[in-house]
Every structure is written in structure tokens, then in C-alpha cells.
Length: 527
Image 1 (spheres, helix red, strand yellow):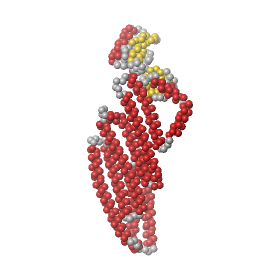
Image 2: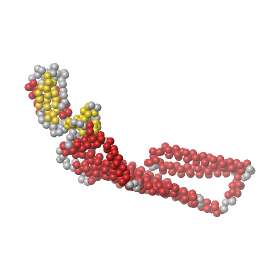
Image 3: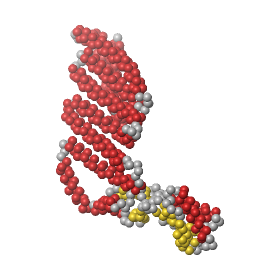
Image 4: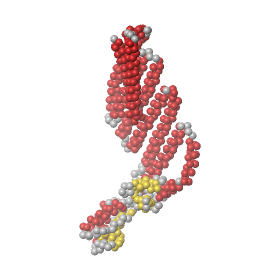
């Protein structure tokens, strides 16, 4: 009988340990569901193992103490059954009645919670199926499933936590226990509802995204949606941060020691809103600028080039303007007067300006390039020198400080506007594709000229980039073993390299067909 009593006491301690371990496990599972703490998953698991280890240690210590105390009583010759009955007999009978009623009420509450959750799970599955069938698509099914799964998990944990609080009240535990349990419940509900809202927002945004793509056409404002769709991840991130800040603010308010910190929550939300609105405003205005500049479909090539040149400059200016305004708004949100900061920045700017002559030179040269129309985006130019080599390529962008050139070989070359120096623009009105052909001394030059001119006329008919047929400029030089003929073909700006390659092949094929042997060492130059 003594052994049974000891086993009963140890079993009760183990039951309490398992209950506490279950509650800790549920709490940590809730924390790992938040995206902010997903990156700390390993640390959270380590903390959970440490807490479980402490609970296990406390359980072992209590079991040893119970066994030791009972062993001491047996050593003194006490009858454990009589000792326990005597100890129990000192407790008023009203306590046992209250305890029995409380246990019965607790068991009934737990059974009712289990049945309610089964009923809830069924109806949530029905609601999830109907939500997925609302729109005949499957693009947002994953978000809907995630939302309803999270909803059930949050409600399930909340119901069980509420049941534990009711059981504590039924069992007449000290008021402090119920008070702290209520605080824990409020914190849990704040986190659970916040995560549910986050899931709901994600599902709503994904659904609206699919609907917008489905119904987008060229006759409504939704035609711009595809160009603004890259803002969707940014929108989700901002909404996620707002929800987390709201959750943190409400949780902090539940703890009296740090409740004053909650006053910063609304300010942080305002800052997030300012940043989001600034980004959206910048993208929308930039989109409207492009729409206005390129609305006319009958623009000439020069007009398109000029407008393509202006777009990056307007984008940079707009970006600085919008983000400067956002910075001022954030300072006002933080109750910081920006006037002294702006005044100090102005004085600092003047001081830096005196020492930044190279920067000023680059900006001034950039303005001259733009206003005097030296070159435009899309022009093929030679300009400046980098490591004693002339830089050439197609202009990809003209900025206030630099010009970006794409070399025919593919390299992106960035040259400071102040280092451009003399400019050779191959994209103004027209350019000559210059090809030099070597022929033997004994060739019939009149026949060679005729063959070359016929090829040029045929190329003009076949290629719209050729403006005039090929003309033989004459004998360029007298080589050791051949005559070098210079040919000119008038082509569209920037097309000379391509036409030169085509002409070299055509000249080679035609001359070989005519029996004219091309010297092994022919000098070919590009102009």
C-alpha cells in the first residue's frame, strides 16, 4: 500500500510536468509561425529544449523529494495510508465538495471544447472550399488554404487556453494564477488575431492580383497594372510590418513595466506609410511621364531618342524630390524640426562644393551635352578616352554626371561627362559604310567597278538601312601586290558596322565568281 501511495504522488507530479510541457510546446509553435521569427528557428528550438530540460529537472527533483519524504516517514514507522488520511481529514469537507465540482466542471469544459473544435474544423473546411470556388482559378488556392489552416490553429489554441483559464477558476486556484493566465490569453489573442489578419491580407492581395491580371485590357486603367505589379511584394512587406508593429504595441501595453514604449507604435506605422506612399507616388508619376512622352505613336526616330534621353534624367530628379519630401515628413513624424538640419546641410553643401570641382565640372558638361544636343540615347558615338583608348558604343543613358555606352562587344562603359572631350557621332542624319577592297594589278578596273556598284544597288533594294547604292571612290593606295579600292555606301546612322560586314562578304563572293583573285594580304579599313 505504501508503494501505491508513493506511485500515485509521483504520477501526479509527472502529469503536471506533461501538462506544463504541452503548454510550452503550443506557445513555441505559435512563435515559430511568425515570419519575423522564422529566421531564428534554430535559436527558438534551442530555447525550447532548455526550458523542457529545466521542467524535467524540476520534475525529477520533486519526485526525489516526494520519495525521500515518504521514505523518511516509513523510516519513522509512520503508516503512509493513515498519515495521508489524517492529513486529508484535516482539510474541510467543503473543500472536497468544491474540488469535486470543479473537477467535474473542468472535465465538462474540456469535452465541450473538443466537440466545439471538431464542429469548427468541419465548417472551416466547407468555407475554404467555397472560397476557392468563388473565382474559377487556382492561382490563390495556396493563400486561401494557408489562411483557413492558420485560422483553425489559432482558434484551437485560443479555445484550449480559455478552457485552462476556466478550469483554474473552477478549481478555485489563487486569483494571481487567473490574472496571469488572462494576461497570457490577451497576449495570445493579440498575436493570433494579428497573424490571422496577416494571412487574410496575403490572401486578399493575391486574389486581387489574379483578378486584376484577368480583367486587365487596353481600354481601362488596369492596362497600367502590369507595369506596377512589381510593387506587390513591397506592399505585402509594408502591410506585414504594420501588422507586426500593431501586435507589438498591443502586447507591450499588457505589461505595465514597459507600457510607455507603446507610444512609439503609431509613429513607426506613420513612417512605414510615408515610405510606401513615397515609393508608389514615384512609380505612378514616372509611369505618367512615360505615358505622356510616348503617347504619340507617330514620333520620328530623333524625337524618340530625345525623349528616351530625358526619361532617365526625369526619373533621377523625381526620385530625389520624392525621397527628400519623404525624409522631411519622417522628421516631422518624429517631432524633429528639419529647419536646422536643412540649414546645416546647405552650409555643408557650399563647403563641399568648393572642393568638388570635378563633380561640378561633370554636371555642367552633362547640361551642355543635353541642351546642345551633342548626342542622344541610341546614338553610336566615339568620346573621351579611358586608359588612352577611345571609348565608343551605343549610348544607353545620359545622366547628370556620367554617360553609359554599350560597346559593340557588349561591355558597358561608364565615362564621366567631364572627360568626354571631343565627340564623334555616327548617328546624325547618315553615315558612310567605308569598305576597302584589294584587287590584283592586272584586274580590269572598269569591270570591277561595275560589279561593286551592282552589288551596292542590289543591297539598297534588299536592305532598308541602305540609303544610296555603293560608289567606288577610286584607288586608295598602291600596295606591293595589289591595288586598294575605296568604296562608300550611304546608310542610316549607326548602321555602318553591320553594312560593312555584309558588303565585305558580298564583294568577296562576287569577285571570286568573276574570276578575280583577291590577294592574300588585303588591307581592309573601317570608317
